[in-house]
Length: 102
Image (cartoon, rainbow, N blue to C red; front, side):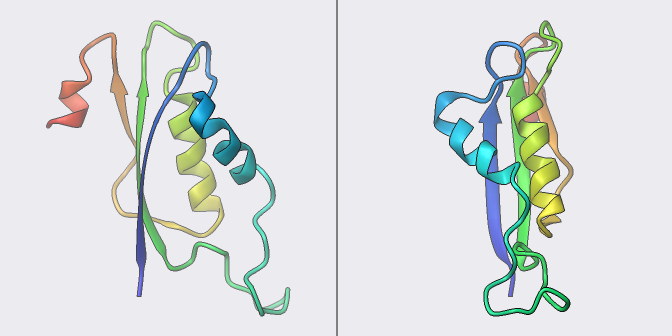
């Protein structure tokens, strides 16, 4: 059985996570915790039963375009999650609709 996670995250300033996502992103940047009840030699990654999709919202006028969404996508994969679809990055400069409403 897989669980689904959908993350939508904007990037503020020059690559910063918004205030309501910064704690979550700091948590993901830590090493993944060992799976509960498993020995370290045989433990599965903590998100091995998770399929995820990430939508990053940003603006290509900034150097760190969609940095928060890209970081979340990368860390969910590192923690053992499976991408349901590739990372999508919506650009405010060219119109978010092209990515959000294909």
